[in-house]
Length: 236
Image (cartoon, rainbow, N blue to C red; front, side, top):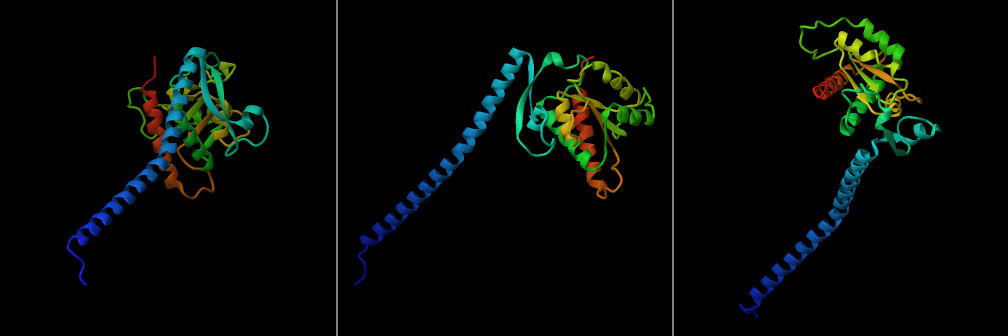
């Protein structure tokens, strides 16, 4: 016996209703899964803003550093727990200009890590001074170099300040861009050393035994662009 015409539309309606219910439940599950991630992002943003407010009130710079460097124990660089460290603004040298912001500092230190990996990094005042003096003097009338022989990154929390005070002028004489980061501990960790470092120089060419030179050339170019942008904000 054939199904009556009244029963057929009822079945279709029921099937449509079931599909809608399944779709609604699926979207609810997706929303529930996404909610914790959104909450976590909001919490991070709130903490970041709160930290910035605290920095203004206390006159300190908050930064993240490997716990091994802060406590003076264990191996320094990659991996391991990290802790937030507050550096008083008074601890930074007064001529630290241009000084990286938090985002810029992360990018610069990432570039330093790549340089260390490619053996294109000079560490410490003596090595950097020697490399800068070897580079040719720049022409004051010429435009800024788009492909300098290197980049100098200095730690702004160095003491006494005379250790690095002569380097910025020397860099300018040789047309080498430079930038400051707020922590010598982080600079040392990025440079794959166990000790805090006052200054490093990122070289354009890779060291001996490194085969993939093209990859580093691209990374060096990105770092030059970043330091150039930070340098535009220099206050004279």
